[in-house]
Image (cartoon, rainbow, N blue to C red; front, side, top):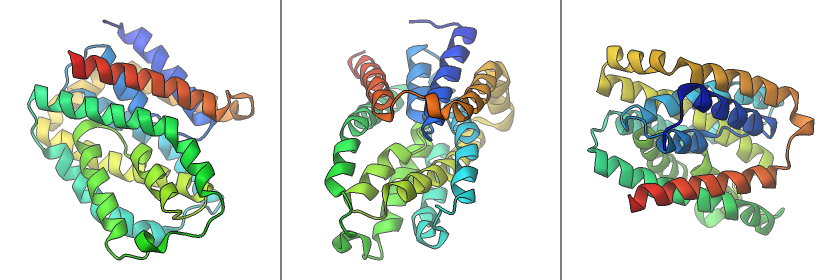
Length: 256
């Protein structure tokens, strides 16, 4: 399936508007659309990570202004996730290995989008599960694993982090959303840095320039979504539609 750059930019703008309207990033959807458009696999992480940065920067600033970001609690997660994301971005992967990893990651992301609301309801207002959250290695281990994967495939990682934090009742859902936003932002920056060092700044710059309409679409869509937040589709509808798209792309990649 081939999608023209303008058509892809419009899809990116629509995705950004929907996600920004409910405070999401949308990185997994961007990379699913890129894979569906049959772009060069080496360009996928660079484009997706930059789109992540554009979209979640505004959300992170809004969370910060509302006092929802607990920096002392978040820093242990970020401590090793940032260098891990950079290393993941630097890692050379053959096309078949990359596509297999991407397909599995998208399949996991799609399933998590479906089950996360149930996890959130199951957790309710229960206190944190100290068996996990009190362990000194919990936060660094979670951050390192997800950060490394994020850098390799170009998914910001919030889609994997949030369910883990919800399952362990690490914090309330609003603070977990704020934490995921910060996590996506810093790991996307680190992962993009690794990707650009791997491909070379000139090659990475050419990729960014070649697909500049996508970044404009994401920027405009994100702003529109923020303005129209009160008129957005329900969060559960966006999650289900996104999950269907991501699972469809994952199956296409894995069965190709």
